[in-house]
Amino acid sequence: METYILAIDQGTTSTRALVYDKTGKCRGSAAREVTQIYPRPGWVEHDAAEIWRTVGEVVPAALSVARAMPKQIEAIGLTNQRETVVLWDRTQGKPIANALVWQDRRTADFCRQHQAREPWLHERTGLVLDPYFSATKMRWLLENVAGARRAAVSGQILGGTIDSWLIWKLTAGKAHVTDYTNASRTLLFDLNKGEWDAELCGFFSVPENMLPRVLPSAAEFGVTAGLDFLPDGIPIAGVAGDQQAALFGQGGFEPGSAKCTYGTGAFFLQNTGDKPVMSQHRLLASRAAMTSNEPQFVLEGSVFVAGAAVQWLRDGMHFIPTAAEVENLAAGSDPHQPVIFVPAFVGLGAPYWAPDARGVIFGLTRNTTAADLARAVLEGVALQVADLIEAAAADTGLSLSELAVDGGMARNGWFLHCQSDLLGIPVRAAGHSEATALGAAFLAGLQVKYWPDLDSLRNLLTVGQHYEPRIEAAERAQRRKEWRRAVKAVVDFYRPE
Image (cartoon, rainbow, N blue to C red; front, top):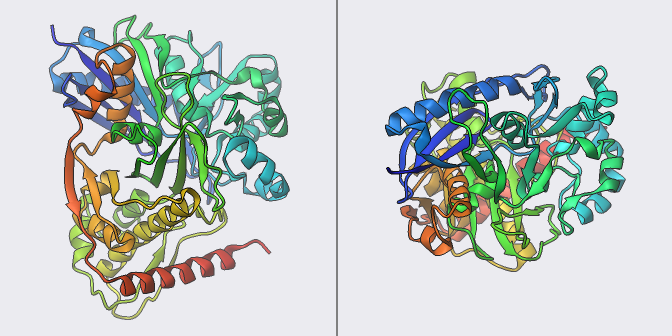
């Protein structure tokens, strides 16, 4: 009987399940959207109970499409939106409040007040002090949900990122675990020692006893139990935060390999091998997806708004009925309309780290059209990514010869040509646009020997479309100079007085 690897990809806007066979082919998939909750400007929440329900919906649906039975699943790989925080009652198994999403900015004041501690935090964690990361969100929940801190200290409340929450539910509360990639995005984890740090937990007032056990990304995380959509005993064998999973799914196993994933945000990661690169340009050092206890690291830059800006064109502005149609709309724009869009809906990430910034459009004229705005939105994402890659090259001393890309926007040929133009190097789309889920499947499959080794995974990788830069260096330099002026104006305007 043929067996499969099930990948669960819990993202910011949707939950997906994908069924993979031994050739790395996806035999069936299903997705459900996740409700976005915006209680106040800059606040972003998810209902963690709804997220769990969507898992129970997409897994049977994906198995049905694959014409596979649950008993044919050999192992589960899990990948998740990182930094998003859930606290739950360990007895009842229910969240004590909505999850605070990685995009949430409500802790910006705390970060400003403690900015002087950032050098220490950066040295210990590889991160910067920003609302993006999990620790300030955990602290906020413990301070603002009645009785939460007392219950957490007594061991009644557990906390973690989305992976921990889902593993807890998949195993009927028997496993409270996470992996190194997710732990390294919390501001509570010593990057070099590879463990929760008592000093960091004390600084953020997060009881260490509520945190999960940390394992490599390919490991024994637990087995399914008490589910109505999967049999008991299926091992959860691979876990990684979405961006590290995508790098693994693109075959980024060696130092120097890099990729950019365009999802809700855009995330550039470069494998730096067995030593972290502590950025001088406000990029981030984190753990890479690992198949053993031997540490591997990545250098990362994060753009908070990428696909989310296209969703804004669709849902907020009603310029397009579907996200895919942004390609044709942008292609019809007037290149002489000098519109620049800084998509800072929830602040700016690396290398600016301006949590109070908001989206701004420059250069509007009476002749500006919806097509021009669509073009500016896509260019705004590509320009931010170009800034990240420039900063990474300055930190590592390595220049990329090409950029590997994946994610929803990697299906937009106009956008990838634009990205290549603004980088001045070729852009190569992954043969499999769902590299994040594939990476989680690869990790789980390696752990249970579904695939024997990394070489067997390399043989499964396919290459998609290739895009070459079309503009001259002088034009590229001018456009990036204008972009930097626009970003500086936004940061200066929204800087707290």
